[in-house]
Image 1 (cartoon, rainbow over the protein chains, first blue to last red):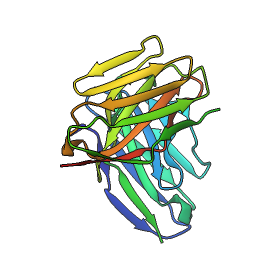
Image 2: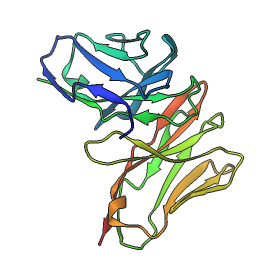
Image 3: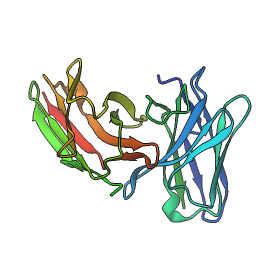
Image 4: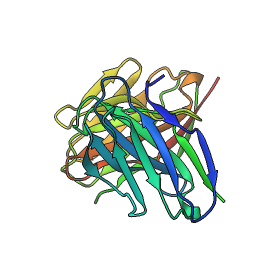
Length: 114
Length: 111
């Protein structure tokens, strides 16, 4: 058990809809990272938050946004969903804001767009 | 230049054999190279990581070999066991590029 909790485990919705994925980091970790894993694109870094502030941005679409709350949990919002957004979305956490430190991953949210 | 090329895509090894997974990169600014192990239905878990000032690092049965001049690094699993069957991802990180993952290797260890 990595200590990182992601909810929900599965999400099924339709094109054009909006969803919110939630992540609770390990106790004591200040950074949260979001990743997308799909068959065609592999594992891609989306965005990092550190202690409530955006720290780094990767291949995140403009339709996607994230935030980290004062209690350090994070949410990833995906809007105007398209079929191609179907993927596994992982959250990871680490103690510091440095990207070259061990990250602990949750078990992901599987998003299916019908 | 931001890619990390991983091979092979899949690998089958007998129990006790030494599977080797290779990765290559172009961007010389990468300065941290982790390997992750992922079981079905689970998130990736950090296995071992290396920095470019070291040519080899061992942790238990897992060894990373790093060749800075060739811009290549590889994972060796000694005395492989069926429980090692998983997908393995190499990755490379720099402060500018952030983390880039390889495409993954599906490893199967036959009993």
